[in-house]
Image 1 (cartoon, rainbow, N blue to C red):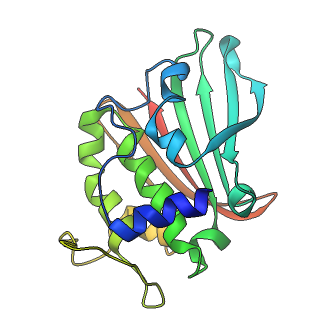
Image 2 (image 1 turned 180 degrees about the horizontal axis):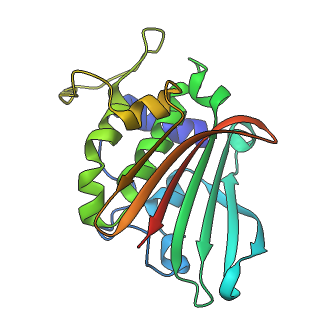
Length: 200
């Protein structure tokens, strides 16, 4: 299911936000975030939760399709009132670096960068999101539809994109209402990229 949905997104090569709401996910009730286009588009389902400080919870989600379950994890930290304060998207490097799977990894990563931050912060991350979507390796292909136009990208990969591609260990970016953290880490399932957005 996830593969089919993502393939449609790649085929039409659109940069439209998956969620619709302009306010992003941070600072909103979890119940609203779960109804967003982002969750529906990527078929994310809850897989567990643990207690967090102050009576909050860290809740884990994965795609319901077996192909991507092991490769992708979204963790959302909520406070005792159920308000989202932190979101972390984990993508195994084997997912990002595999030419056959790379378009799907790019799709969820750029959607996370577009949809999760508050509106003003999403604008500040728009160039990075475009790099993730369009700065392809020579071994990748993309199917495009009529009217396709690749956006202008920086002449050199940004520090954020270098971190996404694995050429850099980490990148942090202070935004007006949130902070972006990107790190390449070694976890129980193998090497992974962690993209985290934290509310201020």
